[in-house]
Image (cartoon, rainbow, N blue to C red; front, side, top):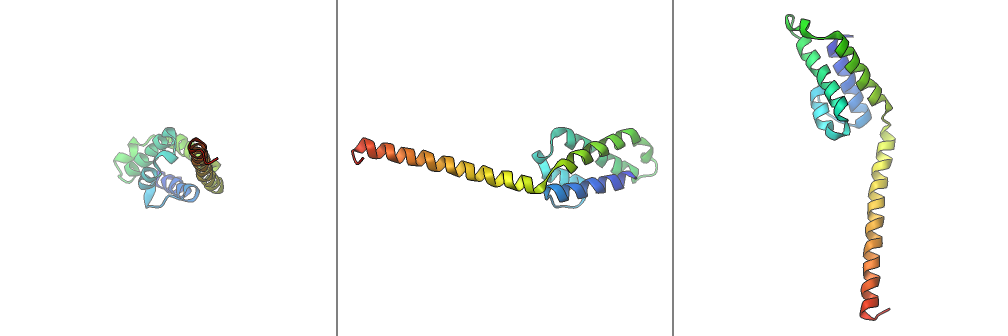
Amino acid sequence: MTPEQQAQDIADLIGARLGIGGQGLERKVRRAGRLLPRRIRREAGVLIEGAKLSAHPKLSRMVDPAAQKQAYRDCKRFLEQIDGSERIIRFVLGIVTANAFNFLAVSAALIAVLVWRGYL
């Protein structure tokens, strides 16, 4: 598998698993931001550099195949573990939890004010 194919495969996985749009791995990694751990962003950078260098005949000798293979394997392993529906469920639960806490805090403050003013 060539470095360009590896980069495209990882870009497709980022698009499918994280829902990140854009063309190419570099743009998708930049858009993903903190959704990807620092280690995976670094490995994706290795893939991006490899894909850029392999496009030039003389510079393609600078690509380290072992580093490319390891970076591809690490990125693929991480992205295949991500479940898109679980991410959505956790996001919705976070919003619901925050709103429930805010409702309880406002209700407690309202009851405290009513007791303090003598209405309860």
